[in-house]
Structure formats: C-alpha cells, structure tokens
Length: 176
Image 1 (cartoon, rainbow, N blue to C red):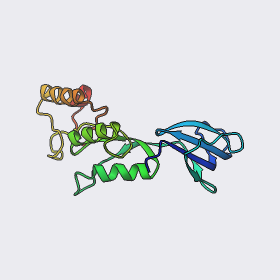
Image 2 (image 1 turned 180 degrees about the vertical axis):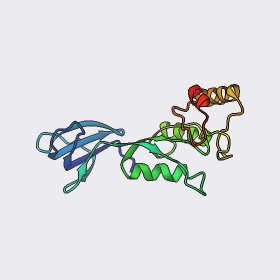
Image 3 (image 1 turned 90 degrees about the vertical axis):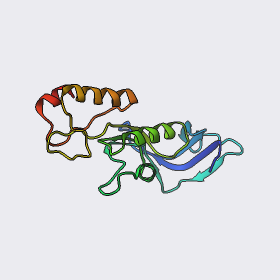
C-alpha cells in the first residue's frame, strides 16, 4: 500500500526500553515514520488514514542483524531477495560480514536508502580478506602495499566493516 497515513490500533507494543509490554496501543505512521504512539482511547485517528486492527498482534522495534550475508554457497548474488527476506523477518538493519560482490552490496544499500529497492539498512563490508592458501575468490594480499591499497579502495567506496578469514598472516592482521 502507498498510504500517507497508516494507523495501527488495538496492538500490544514492546518499545525496546525494557518497560513492560503496553496493551491497547494505537500507532500513527505518517510517510513511513512513527508520528504518534498512545493508548487507543486517547489517540485521535486522522480522517482518510488507512486503519489496521492489530488485535492479537505485537509490535516490536526493528531487529539489528550483526552478522549477515547477501550470498549463500553456490549463489553469490541473492542480495535483492535476501534483503527482502531479512526485512520481512523484522530485521531493519543488517551488517554484512564479508561480501562476494561488495560493489553490488554497496549499490543495493544505496538504492534501499533512496527508496528505489526494498530492504533493511545495510552496513556494507569489503570482500573477505584471507591469506596464502586461502580461498582464491577472496582478497589474498601480495604484500603490505597491496593490502593497504585494497583496503583504501573499499573504504573509500563506503564499506563500513572488514571480515578476515582463515590464513590471514599476523602482520596483515595488524595492518587491517
């Protein structure tokens, strides 16, 4: 639906502060953002709002995934589908941990941020970093300068985290 104002009433709300669940709550969402939260009998429902009766349902804060991937073995590019599944499960922010295609991850994150795609906020990561004998699909630094250049490239592209994998040399880990 593309309603400017959505009202969720008769819901139980867990606000994430540690306070007990509050029953019989009404939430007014305007342009995708919470506008009013209060008791059903105190909140004035705007005219022309899309009203959803949430009796028997509980609303919780969005979940934050701290170790997520937008790929699975044998399927290196499931980002667009996976991001929708994360969001459908209530995960509103994910931090990816090693990417098979960081450029696609960054692009998907930017498109979600601009409202062109559906998905959670994505904290993007660089390709996996490994060492000699590691998976050839990952970054295997040739030397310190190669490692620094590669890290600089991805950090300048906007990745927010790095994932090291098996076989990383201790000296490379210090640089990372």
